[in-house]
Image (cartoon, each protein chain N blue to C red):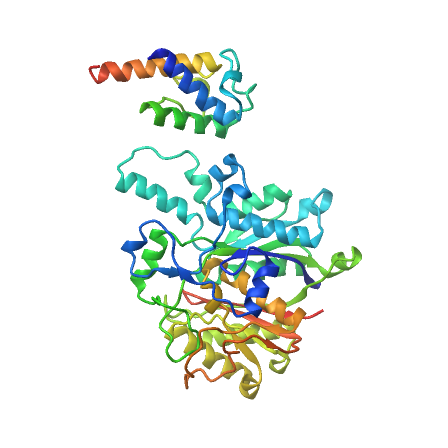
Length: 92
Length: 402
């Protein structure tokens, strides 16, 4: 499951950055990928839609959100955690 | 007071995707109204409209732009590009700092509203795309024009229903005339041909199921259209100095309020607006050769408008021409006056009067020369463009040839 979450997150970020998925490296920051604040909000929306999860992200103060966006690997980790919580809650 | 001239025009509407194509279609008396091609059309009682055909957003905008631009913004951007390209203006330095955009729109991003209401109410979704607000807001089109063309002066949106674009262009005219701005981009845009947009109008029971036939005795209501038209209003000396091609001069503007009824028009309010525009332009009634009518094809508007014209122009009312191009492109609501200004400019510049098509039977209450069915060649030097909105808000522009 986990690797497919990572792949899907990278695909979403790649689409937003207008890059090929393989060019979205785990250590890259969103800024390096050219994703601005609107692009970030749109990516989070796409992640929520793709995994049917709620991402605790507040665009007013991203650093205060309980969702690490410091780089691609951090976002993937945070999404994996949310997906796992969702599955536990669903009794899966 | 400075003189104000028009140095660029652009449009996309049911008659064409450019000003040249639209004027050619008006000249040919083309019907742009047809069967609506929209989602859930089978649940509508009214299934016709002046829809923009053959339009592919991806031909003009990239994926990110489309995510942010409602259809009404897309139309406005395309019309503005065409108008500004024709004007030959580039906005930088002081010109950029002082020039702006005033656009008319009534519904704003109605397609965005419609799609997202559908998703949360009908489909029960609890999450909407993050750009819903910046996409649907009424000023989105004006803002995107300002961003695309680096217009950093006064920009805003005017919403006065069916008079929105005339009020907007009147405002732009006054800003250039008083010297507040050397150039203003102005006009209107509307895209209400979605399920909710048509359903709302249906409720009022003033819509025709078959055609818009202004001034014809057998008329049975209005037909909606969509699209945008945008113009470059420029201070005369500024335009002259750079050798710009001047399309027409804007010479007068007046607005009045009926202060009587939220939907029924008033002869007095309409007449006061026309008289006011003439006075503002220092024109006498006999100077006017053509009026682009509000001419919606409803019983209430057409009778009232003809009576108001008869009152203002007296005996000259029988000599001037008055036509409603809504018969061809439909009623673009907040964008309608802008598309109709193209017919005014064509009359002044090319000596071609756009017809009122679909005219079948004379109406004893509308006996003016409505240029029935066929365009006419005539030399006119001054024209009026009428817009009389729901809510009793009237706005009339006066233009002259240069």
